[in-house]
Image (cartoon, rainbow, N blue to C red):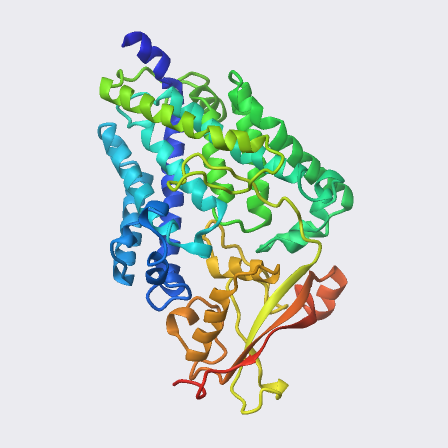
Length: 488
């Protein structure tokens, strides 16, 4: 066991373990908080796509979830707020002070609870970073506690997770639109990305040579650098730093929920204690030196971690094959537990930005254009005079779905029900919006109009004080009303 332990234990990654465990737990906290605030209005008993209807059509074996047994909005809130509290204890490092099974149990409870949510979340939980969080949460559960050295096999597997995430995204781009190959993708990305932030318009106006450099740097970071995560130190630590910096650029220039944040956390699996103390000499221990030896891992922990590692290696076959497949899948799960997934994003970049603006009117005649008032969302562009805000790592699910809706997605059932809820004056739905122009009574009619948006130039911004310039592009939904008129 001593020889096995020497191979099994990675004592010089104790600081990395702290970052991985606390960082992933922090993302779980944000995810459960987002769920507590948004799930009932989107998927609850009176939601846009009620869970009760969905579980009546889908078997438990196809989408394991606690809510196959029973669903209620109260039960959902208990699970979500319980997840927030449990994640907070891990962020504070409390379970890590106990035996190895304690943080393992805590992370597995977070994974199982969030899996129950994602597997019934339908289109509102169909984003790649949901699977990424589930996979990361399951894997870091087996990093142990402060009483034992971090298992080397788990440290290496987290690097494999980052490799799939970055290299998969790079290959998706190379196989995608020509704008990635001719280095013009970033001419459009900052303006057309799902949810710009306060910096996006400034970066969009930077010169063409800078945007070409962005694309070239992206290709190097995603197609070359990930291989060096498996190199000896200090090369692996340098590769991790490069990936972290590229992700920080995406954090600064856009809103991609927790995708960039969790990637930054996970790359620390390639940073050893020596590198940490070289950069941060104030950390306990001598600068440039690894951590002191920790007690040997108990046999049960060694056996369990090796068994889990073997399972993860077996499950890696399908995403590894996907990386080299001609028809590469993007953000795909190969099992119902969202373990060892395929990732990738923005295989193509849209050249023009279209937004759907939802409006209501209380006039007797829907033809009275002066009576129409717009509903405003928190994150997605609407009022041209409003500066885009920063929301990530928080995930505004309704706003993201509105972006996909403008791209022409076929399944619009949730949006049709959204319009019904506006006509009903449904309070949970209205609380998800930034501005409800009908606070006293619901409108008589609602409609949806399509606009083309672009960032205002500096001259236009000076003249109008608007951040966006928008032009009408047609009608998306003509005026509709409830049978029998508005409901009080």
